[in-house]
Length: 403
Image (cartoon, rainbow, N blue to C red; front, side):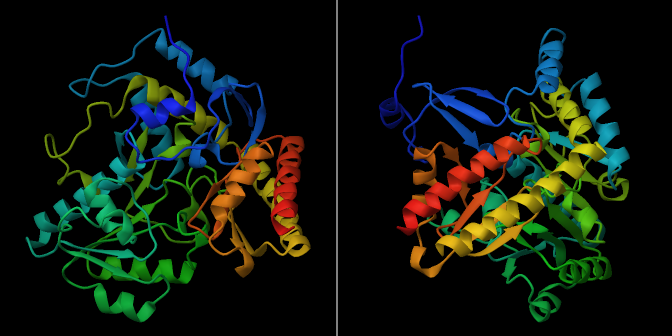
């Protein structure tokens, strides 16, 4: 017999690294969730840009249930059909020639950073280990990736960080030219910085990274854990920049809610350096995860879905900017497809969490990007009516807080 649970059970049994709101969700369909009390919520958070096709999408349900009846796991001593089918699809749609599977964005970035260092040391010797990253970036919660990320609050208090990591400000060309050199093995960047507020990086700055990485034979790594998989209206954000990385990492939306991480790279990067035994993942390439991800990719890569993302983004951004003007709550609305960073006005400084709580009381779920940015990432296939209903609920939040 399964016992009933409440929010109080979280505080009693769970390690307190999270502090969830009071509701407990029991069902989802499309862009709506229902809690234990039967109340419905419009989901503009998508599990932090994970449920890219909403909840219980029929195509994903079909892929999962069909694969569940065939094969769940075989380990990487063997391979399986969904893993190979997904790899072929990813290589056909992107610059990639090689694919590595894992379970999360952090693991994908861990693999990318290890590959970049291994390649550099193999080719140039043990001094070529420096990684250039950017202040305000976020690349995951493993100790390596959290050290490479540009937010010291996440890596402090745990002893010394791994050596050879350099942080500079995004957009600082002089600093970039100064720190990239013969010892650099990698430059890692989010082409659209997520956790610091949905901030697109200037393509000219990305182009300079590409030039310097090529000049010093370093790997250019694009972290597209959040910006990838149709979120911006392109399949991957790099496709809008004119810059092609050597390694691309992704996760979140590619699984539509099923855990999977992916590192994409070239044959030149991978073949002589990530050889058998150098790296691995017990569940990487799991048939269930790959079957679902393949179904997700086939939906979001369609011209109709990507065009719909762009169309809905224009409409939502217009409404969000109108809210900012009407209620004095947002000074700027940054839009990257169906991904929005709404910068709070000075009178609301530090209150992004309050917006999230009040919105939840109004039946809208969204997230934050630091204390001053309301972050929205609705499903890529959200119905127009639900998009507007969610925006109506956010408008109510703005009206209440401005009062």
